[in-house]
Image 1 (cartoon, rainbow, N blue to C red):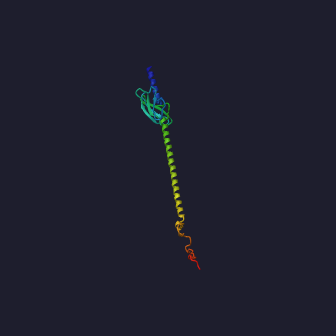
Image 2 (cartoon, rainbow, N blue to C red; image 1 turned 180 degrees about the vertical axis):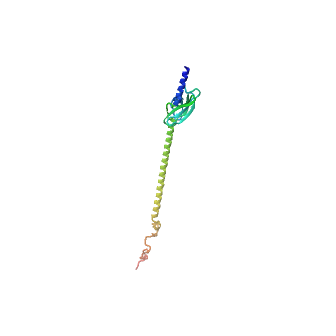
Image 3 (cartoon, one colour; image 1 turned 30 degrees about the horizontal axis):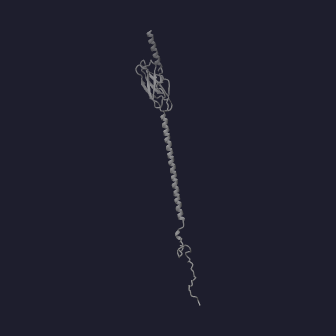
Amino acid sequence: MELLISLGLIVMELLVVTSGNLPPPQLSLMTSGTIYMGDKLELQCTAPTNYPEGTFYLFLNNTGQCLEKKEAPETKNAVKFTITSSYTMKTMQYVCNYKSYVGNELQLSEASNILYVTFKVPVWVFILVGLVGLLILVAAVLVTLCLVRRNKKKKREQRDKESIWIAQDMTKDWPDGSHNMVYDSNSHSRTEISNTYPSNMDPPTDDRSVSPFSTFRAP
């Protein structure tokens, strides 16, 4: 009877070896509660009990990237992986498998179930994004005000320059006051006014003579 049991076990092992794949493990999430971006994440990969002391691997299912490799303790058929959760706002997919000796040959198992983990955004991220947005808004307002003030200053300087040019032109066109003479009403003599008579003409003369005044009467 014992011989038959031994033969049966040998046949089973031969079938496993020829198949080339060991039974798949079970992947489970050990971290409880809400998982935020950047938190530590603990996963457990468990092989069937008759495949202890295996070498376990944790993968990202969508990329095939191996995140961690771990040896199972003596007589144990499970390991725990501790990783840092993703900083992306999406659901990650994890799988694991293991290698174990069947007789003298090392065999690879099939992939485990796909474990979906969704990461939440922590509150401080929203606060940080809000502060950054506020700072950008304040900076934009300050820059706008500076540009407006600079534009106004340039326009004011331009108007001042134009005013100076107009004043200079008016001064050039204004008649020279040195050609005019002023008559003083309080003085006993008249002041000649230039340009009153043409330069090629003599001023008019009074030919009338004044008779001498006398108090004596003629006979």
